[in-house]
Length: 359
Image (cartoon, rainbow, N blue to C red; front, side):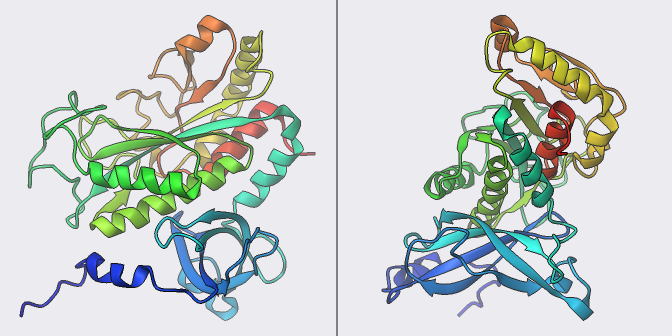
């Protein structure tokens, strides 16, 4: 009998166990963000009942194994901040998004949510809405995009964007499974589409108000990696996953306050853009690693060392949609963030620039 490969999926065998009675218990999968911007998780058994972040127990993990603490003082605490239904093991099991805190009662240095939550609370009367567009690339075990010829390249980008049909798109099964998993979990996913490079896709999350944006985007990333794991694929959020004449991958960030969404809102949109221009370098510093490989001024991007804006232009730092310009109110799109950027850092930076720091 042939030996099974280490990564061989045994889904049919697993399904025999999925409907077993859990005897009044549930599985709670605690999820956190590590030092490299990846999601991690581990599970525990709790009594089967309704939980909120306040009623869930604080847990801990070995931070020395995730780059978040030294070996001599390695315990990092997981404080629950959001609860979602688990699409993988289903009801009554739950996913628990957490913040990382150190033993001295301070946020872990990689806990970017804490400061973001403070500024969202400080400016909550402005009702800030966000919508983030997550681009990503699906890779095989050779770290090349699915559907690419071995040792070669596919046809130039043209037929792939929002493409349909064999030869135009690959791995739609992963995309659909992720979409369904997000809907089941209650993530505010608003759509998905194939992108301009084969094996590159995008999904959108939002509109979300305040801190909810970062929470839902991070949970959606966790779900994407779990789904891809089942299909034997890797998820890359590198902003330039393949060199050459290909668009990079971004995390385009749409933003508005209540006054921007009302009649006369264009005045407030333009005022906010002027403020963003004055803090361009501060934004670039938190808009993702290797972003200089993507923000070249080509391939529908602005140059990383320049700030530009305009109506319906995808070659600028900030784009005002044509419809918004015509109506005179709505939102704007910050096209600078890379696909690997932290949504808490993006939304925090936008709030500080447009609305002012928390006093």
